[in-house]
Length: 84
Image (tube, rainbow, N blue to C red; front, side, top):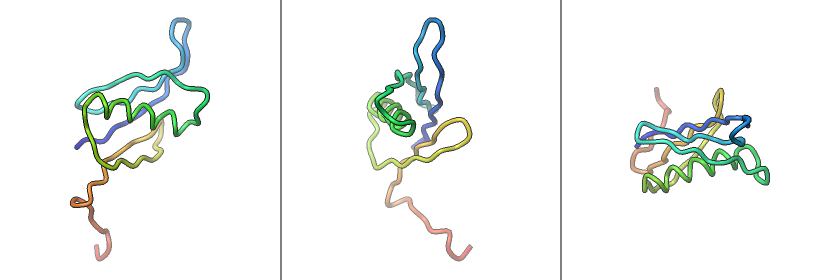
């Protein structure tokens, strides 16, 4: 699985505000929905990319400089940092 990064692009003279969701397997642009909050818009873009790539699983996200990152939380691949 790959992490999905999202980033906001403001409106231009020719295009409205949008968010790109991307990973090595592909990318997608989603129009910014003013009815949603910031995180919800980034999550919607990540979900659109997941549908496009036909990926499933439980995904979690968090903010980073310039946007958000979403990763798949696979229970069999989880680990603990305790004892390190």
